[in-house]
Image (cartoon, rainbow, N blue to C red; front, side, top):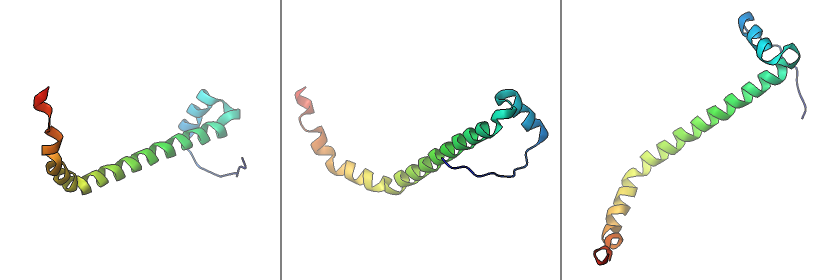
Amino acid sequence: MSSSRLNIVLPDALIREIDQVAGRRKRSQFIADAVKRQIVQLEKERLGRMLAEGYRATRHEDEELTSEFEASDLEGWDDY
């Protein structure tokens, strides 16, 4: 995988924490992994919001279909 060098600014305290956890020589990999996890999390949240919006938008259609087929869904249950 190709890489690019970035010039970013982080608080000194955060850099010290990164160094304690990952070590000075592994800062870049640690930050790349953290950013990737955050991107994945944000994407999951975005998709969750889209699904929720879709469900809300079609709720009335779903209720109509459910009520339309309710009688046939219950057909034969008295036999059990």
